[in-house]
Image (tube, rainbow, N blue to C red; front, side):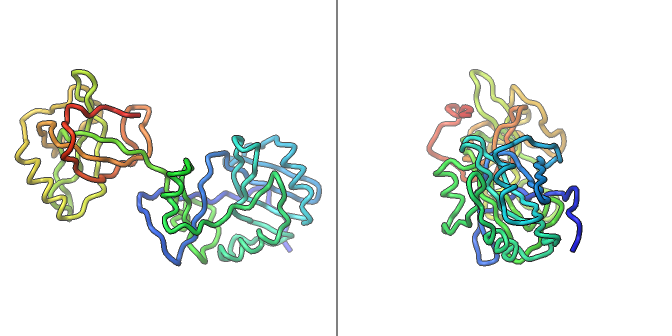
Length: 285
C-alpha cells in the first residue's frame, strides 16, 4: 500500500494526420471540454486542471465523494455544454495502488468496476469502422486512438493519438520549394487564396503526397514557373529554395484550423482540382 500522491502528471495525446483502424488500437470520442483530474482520499476530494490549477465544482465533488472507494484518481474531461458531465476515460490510482503501469485494458476494467453515476460517466469505446467519419458527421472535436496494452505515461505519448476533425478548403498554388533529403519532385506547395485584387499567402503544404504525385506536380508546376512571387499579401514566405508559378492550379486541402496569423494549421493535400477556376478561390472560414 502506498500513500495517495499529491499530483500525477496527466498523459497527453500526440496529434496525428493519419486515419487508421486495426486490432492494436481502441478508439474514443475526443471531447471539447476541460481536462480534469479528480483525487479522492476518504471524504477529501480535490479537482485539478491539467496544469494543476484547483477547480471548484461542488456537484461533481459530491458525486466523487460518494464513490465506494477509499482512494482514487480519475482522469477525464468536463464538458459544460452537456450540463457539466464528467467524461472519465482513465484511472491512475485505486485504494493505495498506483495502477498507471497496468495495461490499458486492465485500467478500463477497473474503471468499469466503479459504480459511476451522473454527473460522472465512463467514456465508451467506438466500434465504428471509420470513427473519424462519425466524428465529422456528428460535429465532435475528434477521435482519440489508444494502443492496446499500453501503460499510462506522464508525458505526451505516441500510445495516445488524437485525430482532430478537419476542415477543407480549396486553395491555389503560387509556388513550391525544392525537395530535401530523399524527397523527390518538390518539398512543399506554397498556397493562397484571392481576396479582392490580392493573392494572399495561406501557408505550406508538405504532406499528402506519394512519389508519383510529387513528380507529376513538379512537371506541371515547372510549366507554370515565373520569376517573381505572385503573392501580393504574404508573411512567412520561404526565402531559400523557392520557385514561383502562375496561380492557376487549384488544390483541395484538409487542415485543422486557421491560425491567428491567417495560416493553415497542419494542412495536408487531398487532391488537385481541375473543375474550378483559380480566380474564384476565396477563404471560406
